[in-house]
Structure formats: C-alpha cells, structure tokens
Image (cartoon, rainbow, N blue to C red; front, top):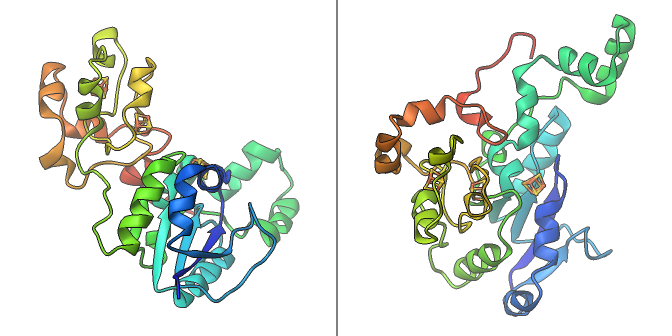
Length: 257
Ligand code: SF4
Ligand code: SF4
Ligand code: SF4
C-alpha cells in the first residue's frame, strides 16, 4: 500500500499548497509513490486515515494548538510546509505587540467591552511555528516553497534517502550567478546567513534577500564570512535585524501576550 498523505492549513495565504498543486510534470512522479487522501485546495474527498501530514501555516490560537496535536497524533511523519509553518511567517511580526495593541491598530476598537467581546474569536493570538507546539520531522522552507524542492524532498523521504535541503548560505548560489552584491549598492542583504536552495532569485532580481528560508543551522559557524568581513559586518549584525521572516530569531515574549 502506498503511504497516505494529507494536507492541512493554519494561518497562511495557502500559497505553498498552491505551489504543490502546480507541480505539473513532477506531480506524476510524486503520485506514483503516494495516495493523497486530503488536500482541500484540489479535492473534495477527505480522510483522517493518513501516514504523512503536510502542514502549512502558523499556529495562532489555543484551538489551533489542539488541532495540530491531533494531526500529529494521527501521523507517522509530519512535514512543515513553508515559512509560516517553519518560522511563524510574516504574521509573526505581530508578536512585537500585545494582542490588544494589534486589535486596536487593525480594527480601531477603543471600547474595552468590545475588546473583551472580540477575545471570544481571537483568543489572544500569538503566532508560533509548528515545532514550538509539536515535533516536526522535516521542514520544507521558503515563502512560497520551491515546488521542485518539495517534489525532491518527498521522493527522497519515500525512497529512504536524506531530504536534500541545503545547509549553506544563499551567497553561494548568488555568487554562482555572478550577481552584483546588494551591499555594493548600499542595500542590506540577509544572504550570508539565509539558507540556500532557492537559487537566490531575490538578489538576482536586484532585491535584498529577506531570509524567507530561515537561517542555516549554526550561523556562527556557517555564515558567508568573506562577504560579511568585506562590508565590516558580523553574524550578530545580521541576526539583530527584524525582517519579515526572521522575527522568530530575535523574539522576546511581550507582557500581556
Ligand atoms: S510561507 Fe508564504 S506562500 Fe507559504 S503559506 Fe506562508 S505566506 Fe503563503
Ligand atoms: S550578500 Fe546578498 S547580494 Fe551579496 S553575495 Fe550574498 S546573497 Fe548575494
Ligand atoms: S533569496 Fe532570500 S528571500 Fe529570496 S527566496 Fe531565497 S531565501 Fe527567500
């Protein structure tokens, strides 16, 4: 029997699931190896009998934590899909403020009674990555994920090989493309610490890398130090920055959260 695979989503834009749905020719290779039993974006059928859970999105509320724990309990393997699941996503930047401050800013709610009432629905939202709630077996990083990488990781897992997620910085891929370094034109780039595997599309297009794939393991040992040294920077200079995707690495719990 082929392994049964189910997709789930929490707080996200569902763009990573869309990338999987758009696998096109690689999908045929993947489908030879698995049975998809739940995938809300592409099919109506749903089964709670699965071996592999692929989960997209950040965990926001206590009810989400409970749901994720049930998914974990049903699955032999749990895969975090994309930056929301891996890091808490762009939405994690909201953790800089209390839930009440966020609600006031977004909805302009001024009446304390209304704020108390809205807690019925929001339950003091705090963004978390999946591995802050349950054990995650594998992570496919990126915002969105790279669909070819997804296919390669799944095929490697199903054929008993180590999933091919690189553990070296984006600078390596960027230099291979002979790009002009963002630092030479006065921009700040997270590439010396960001995990490669995307092919450095952002600096190639003239934009800073925001490390949507998170950092390499052990950045103090594996950063692209020649680039850092050339521009008078340290690993800590990069890690102190709060970008769209790396707030997880600098977050300190806020009172009232
Ligand atoms: S990681 Fe990016 S593309 Fe994927 S669900 Fe989150 S916001 Fe969407
Ligand atoms: S710092 Fe950014 S632009 Fe410069 S080499 Fe590294 S990835 Fe490329
Ligand atoms: S270059 Fe950086 S921001 Fe762009 S896709 Fe790669 S890791 Fe993400």
